[in-house]
Image (cartoon, rainbow, N blue to C red):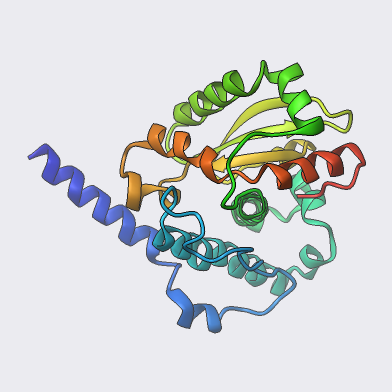
Length: 240
């Protein structure tokens, strides 16, 4: 009886989550505006077998697209949203009109988080090199300890959220969890990298086995891109 209840709950959750995500036809009719969905820098199946193609398609084409579409909807009545850098808006949410503040927090946060997320993945894995490797050794206790701590932090996120590595302008790193689509940008910080632990990021392949997903994810981290973001952060050029 308990398994049946859980199955029904999951089906209901999936149905509810899909309501604003009506696929490619709805996306074609989505409001135009200043916010754009960045294309994936690789094919949907490029991260197989660690992240399946169907998950990537749904995650990017529906979930991320919904955040972008919702922001363009807000920008219709509040055009100032499209005239400021994303990181500036998120760092000053109290300046956003109260009626749309929660919507902007969730959708612009999701847009920023996912834009970063697609950038730092690829068919690579391996190990970090250069300055970012040295920073991991210095601030996070070396690669193995860092990965274990990062995975443990991501595993403890209750419900939906993210686990990030923040980076300061002097290159210092820290592991930071955030709920929902919150982002370090809301605290005036910068995210070097991060992993999405919403169920939509892994459920088709891993079901409730989030620790397995977190462990497998390291196989698709593009350390060259992470290194580029680290250099940009130290130069003051890292935005989202």
